[in-house]
Length: 363
Image (spheres, rainbow, N blue to C red):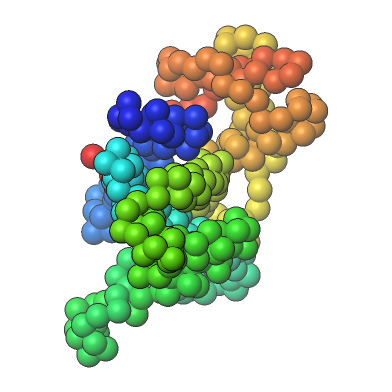
């Protein structure tokens, strides 16, 4: 991936390994999404389960499906573009094109900020679902969130207001709003972004990274030491951004999908009412986890339920952290995993029926 010359120049910087790991892991951690279910196919796919339900019930179920589809695809589109930028950083760093490296780094940070903003706004609207007074009210809140996704996907600064309306486009969300949100979650993002902007804009730093900044001599020769120092700072911004995304992968890419899938599954249950939709299932499980045969299985209807109960078990048993996966396998319609804690190794099993179908957006 990186040339020997790049490794000789910057191989001691941990950013190189961080970039390699992020690119290699992205297809399995961040670019796997639920299969998109066309709302028009909903009745065909789920008719036996919803035949006796009201039109209002079915609209709500379709709404949760659309939210999962749209957030899943939208977040992975952003991630795919981010990885394309990372691929470009490898090439330009190998070619010692430090000016374009700064451009790629800035774009990486912009896409990271957009992911943070997407998750933040989504979580804020989702939290209001619990305040719904009726199924119709809840459907309205779902549509409001879908409108936000539409603005996020189809935002633009071009075409003019009349043409935007005809084309179904929206005013773009300003990158400064995304960066402001990103800076609250990852302090320092805005300052690092401003630094990259000065490298990209026709300002002092972009001039100095290409030519010698010695104004006394007005030399057009490159100052290699200055270039190297600035490049290290660029690599710092890239690494910090990727480390944040990596450590918040679950929150940014999966939590909302699990929430929507959970509410969908719960509302699919016969006789469920709005009042019970947001109630948490009682904490219960079978097995002691000391072997695969006696693996712990939670009384969960969704992956969200499973993870919630796992967190409670960790706290109740004082297991000392989330646990490190040390083994996994599939058998008999279950996924088995062994987690290592400071004092124990425990086996867990999850019915494969709880998992939604997934596919990769990143090719």
